[in-house]
Image (cartoon, rainbow, N blue to C red; front, side, top):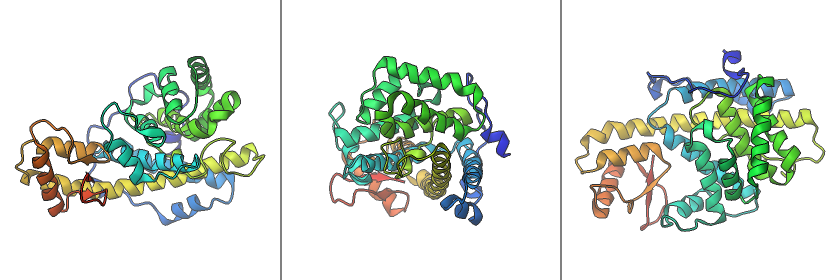
Length: 332
């Protein structure tokens, strides 16, 4: 099973596999204790590689179920990755501040440097995988992450990643090599763009329709400017990244189990909702990290939307995420 998922010889040129019958979230297989132990403290590069393969195999099953709440799951992970990115950059914004930067800014207004980091990770989580390692997307994402990458340089990175696709069998090795490509040509931006690029390449190698933010979750992810021991060997670097992927995959599965339970509750109470536009609100809650009560949703007024959220909270189907009495945000 491991070889079936982890070994993919080249970047996809066709539509990813679609699973038409999704398993209920309640049937998700729990993560074994031994895997958590190995992922937390692998004693060797072989242990780290095995933990990454096992954890990503389990995560692959979650991704391919294509749950209705997968959009909210990926965007919640994107928020966590953006917070880790901001921390590595020496910024003070946490997940709550980043969420506010996005939700409380008018369309078209600047969300600020930290908010743009969130936009970069939301791009990874929402755009089709096949479009991620393109010149235009790489230039835009690098800018959002606070780095400059011109079109020619972005094209060079994309071309080299394409050229090594057939030579790399292990999906995580492909992600590691993507970081190496970036460091070799543009080391000054590897810390910011490296984890994002690695996650894009990993998703492509595994045949996922949408990428799942993973390496960006790790506090020490990135390139040579990361807070890591100097002169780290190539083997030590691979062990670190494999271990980071194992830990991130387990974290993603834990979040999937949590959001799956919450989504089941939301879907269970949805038939009780009589408000006009309630179906649209439910779909938005399932597809994104959070929405605000002032969102412009066709068929429902601001007051009606607030009443709907109050009702959903009474039913235990959503949470208020801001902790404020006004300008509140809601999500699974």
